[in-house]
Length: 260
Image 1: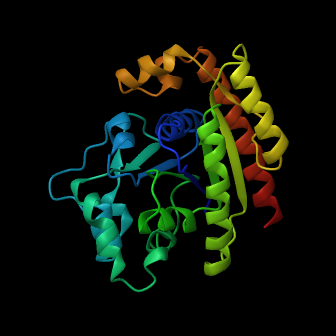
Image 2: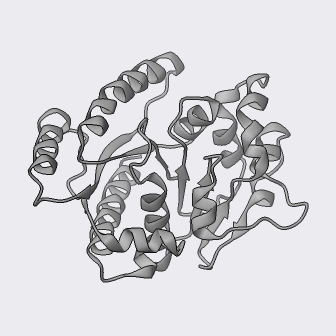
C-alpha cells in the first residue's frame, strides 16, 4: 500500500489544494486513488464535493469502533477517485482516540485491514496541528510531503517540524521512507522568493523536491469554484507544474516499490 500524507506545521501553505489537485490528476491518468480528509475543517471534502449518505459510517466510527473503512468511503466526480470525507464527528476524533490502545496506529491498522487493498495510492490531508490525528496520518503513510511557501515563516517552521519528526520516529520506532518539501506559489521574479528558494536549497537540499509549483492566479479561481486546478484550468502554469510533481512522485514511488 502506497500512502502519502500532506502536512505542515504552518497553515496556509496549500496542503488541500495541492493534495486534491494531485489526487484528481493521478485519477485522470488511470490510477485508483483514495483521499482521506483528516482536517476537521473539511476543506478537502468541500473541494471534492464528497457527501456521505444518510446513516453512512464515518471515519470516526471506523477508527473508534473498528468498523471497515470501506463503509466510510464516498464517490467523487471522478470514478477512480474515492474520498473518506470529514464529518462533524471529526471534531471529537482526537479526544476519542486518547483512551484507545495503540491509538496512534488506528488508521494504519484500518487501511491494512482492507484486503485485498483496492487502491493504487492513498493521499491524506491533515490540519496544521500536532495531535493524535496527526500521528495517525504520519504512521499510516510511507511518504510525507511538506508544502512550503517561499517566505521566512515557512522556512523557519521546517526546523521545528524536522525536530518533531526525528523525535517522533525515534520514540515510536517508525521511519518514513521518503520526506519531500514541495515549494508552492513560487514567483521567481520576486527577489525574496528567490532568496527563500535558495535558502531551502542550501539547508534542505536532501528533502527539497526538484519540481516546484509556481504562483498562478488560476489557483485562487479554482478554489473559489471548489474545483481542482488541474480540472479548472488544465493548461495553466500551476496545472503544468503539478503534472511535473505527479511525474516525479510516480518515479520515486516506482523506484521504492521495486526495492521492496
